[in-house]
Picture 1 (cartoon, helix red, strand yellow):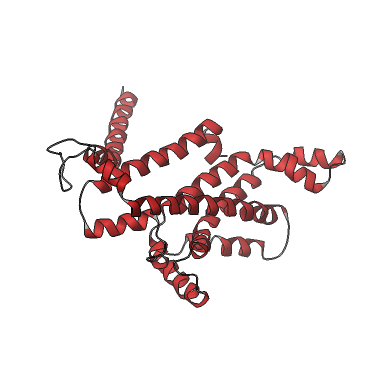
Picture 2 (picture 1 turned 135 degrees about the vertical axis):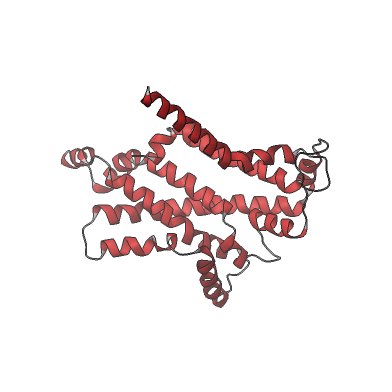
Length: 264
């Protein structure tokens, strides 16, 4: 009886916490269909006008495609760099291996505003401000540590018996890597790709230091819009971003399942 009572209370507590955490996200949906001129809840009228206004806003659309392109490029580069780097750190024995791994993942421990200011100072000397190259390099600083950590953990928890069996049967190391190691690493690759994409697409603090009139991302464009205007178009954009995030999660789920992709 006591166990049942405790379970009931715990379930109620978890439900209340979930509602508390999801309430701001849930409220965005009805506000996005508001027909009012300003942000207000509950809306006094209903309309799709702010979705139409969003798709008619050229600056927002341009920023969206910039963010999408940037996220794809950063994700691909993070995997291309992160996979061999994780393999070297996990599979090779050398002095300073732990130090090297800590250096590569150090950006995860630094405040983003400090990191953004440091990147601004360095990039200003090389003419990388307000350029796609500069944004890609800056986002790599943030996304690569996530990819490296996920891939390193995935490699460290792999059963190496299949690789050793392939080697004993005469397969070359490079062939073993592409035909055995990479397929076994697929769940870690998918998880790293999803996380890198979302981190790059949603990055705003560091990006604020690097954007300008020539180039801007969607989070920065939304930040500037909210600073000057307070209407439900921001809620409409937020709903689409939430759906995009859910879409990435569903792709991971359909590919191999969230538990397999993010937990080894």
